[in-house]
Amino acid sequence: MPPDRQLTFEALPKSVVGVLSTIADAGHEVALVGGCVRDRLLGLEHKGDWDAATSAHPEDVAALFTGATWENRFGTVTVGRDPAVEVTSYRVEGGYRDQRRPDDVRFGVSLADDLARRDFTVNAMAWLPTDLAVGQGIVLDPFGGEADLAGRLLKTVGGPRERFGEDALRLIRAARFAGRFEMTIDPQTEAAIIELAPTVETVSPERIRGELFRILQLDPRPSRAFSALERLGLLKVILPELVALRGIPQSKAVAGDALDHTLAAVDAATVEARLAALLHDVGKATTLGGGHFIDHEKVGADLASTVLARLRVPGSLAARTLGAVRHHMYAYDDSWTDAAVRRFIRRTADVDRALLFALRRADNAASGAGPHGDDNQGQLEARIARELERQPDLLLHRRLAIDGHDLQRELGMSAGPEIGAVLDRLTEAVLEDPALNEASTLLELARQR
Ligand code: ATP
Ligand code: MG
Image (cartoon, rainbow, N blue to C red; front, top):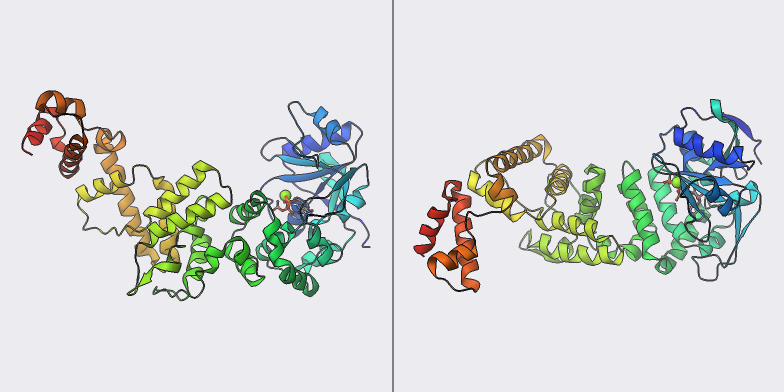
C-alpha cells in the first residue's frame, strides 16, 4: 500500500470548506472522496458536485444542516451550494443479488472500508484534511489510484467480474472515465466489461441517464466516451439508435459515417445543445434514398422521442430537444426575403430557437461548413432579431389585428373550420406584408375571398 502523503488542496470552494468544517467541528471524521480528489491530482478544475465521506451517520449529518434531508437508503445528504457537496456515511455493501442494489448497507465502518467498496482505483482515493484553513491534508490511496492516474490506467478495485456483477452501472461508468481521461482499460477489466455488457439491461433508466448526462455535461469531448461505449458493446444496449448510424454513408466535406458525424456534432456543441446533437440525425438510419435522407428530421424526431421517453428525460427538456431535432434542416441563404424570415419565425414559434441554432452551429461545424457556415447562421439570427423587433405583436404574440369573432360579426361567417382557413390566409398575407395588419384592411381582404 502506498504511504499516505501530504497534499495541499488550493482554492477549495468556500461552500466545501464550510461543509467540511461543520462536520469536523461536530467531532466527526470527514474526507473528500471521488471525482474531486481525482481531478485535483490530475490538475483539472473539478466540475459538478463534490463528494465527501464521513464517519457520522446520515441522520447526524442531516441534523447539522438546516433543511438537509437524506436522499436514499445509502444516506446521501446533499448540503451547501455552488457547488453542492454530497455527503455519504462510511459504509460497506453486502450481497448484490439483482446486479444493481446491495441487499444490505452497513454504516459505522472505517474510511478504508468505504474506499474498498468504490468502483475504480482512481476513484477510491480520499483526501483527509489536517488544516482546512490552509487547505492542508493527506491523501489516502489504498489501491494505487494515483499511480494508475499517472499511467492513465482504469482498473476496478478488486476483481472486475465480481465488481461489475454487483452493479452493472459500473460498466457504463468505466467507459465514461476511460473516455474523459483518455485511459487505457486494464485488460482484465476490459474483458469483464465486454463479457458482462448485456447485463446493463438490468440497470434502471434513470441511472443510465445520469451517467449519459454526466458524459454530455462534464466531458469536454464526449465522443471519446461514446466510442468507448461502442467498442465495449455497451452502446448497442443503451442506445441502439446510435449504433444503427454506423456505416450509414455521408457525403460531407469531412470523412466518416453518420455516427462519426453525430459524435463530431456532440463535440462541437455547447453543453446545452449536446443532447440534441446526440440525437439530431438518428433518423438517417432508415431514410436514405436517392442520395438524400428524406425527411430524416421528422423520422428522427419520432425516434428521438422514444429514446428520451425510455431514458425518462424530463418533459420540458425532452420537448425542447425534440423541437430542435425536428427543425434543424432549414436551408438559409441570403436570398431569403424578409417575408421568408418571418415565415421561418412563425414556423419555429414553439421551438427553443437558441437551442435550435446551437444545434445547427454544431451540425455545421461537424459537416465541415467552416466559417462560411457560421456567417450564414449569424446572418439568419440577426435578421430574425430585426424582424422580431419590427413586428413584435405579430411575431412574438402571434396577434393578427382581427380574430374569428370579428369575421363572424363583420362578415356574417358562422363558426367552423372555414374561419381558421381565412385566418391562415390572412396570416400568410401579413407575413408577406406586415403593413396589412390593420383591422379594416384585413376585413377587406377577407371579403375578397
Ligand atoms: P464526477 O467528477 O464525474 O462526478 P465521480 O468519480 O465523482 O466523477 P460520482 O458519480 O460523483 O463520480 O461518484 C462519486 C464517487 O462514488 C466515485 O468516485 C466512486 O468512488 C463512488 N461511486 C459512484 N458510483 C459508484 C458505483 N456505482 N459503484 C461503486 N462506486 C461508486
Ligand atoms: Mg462526483
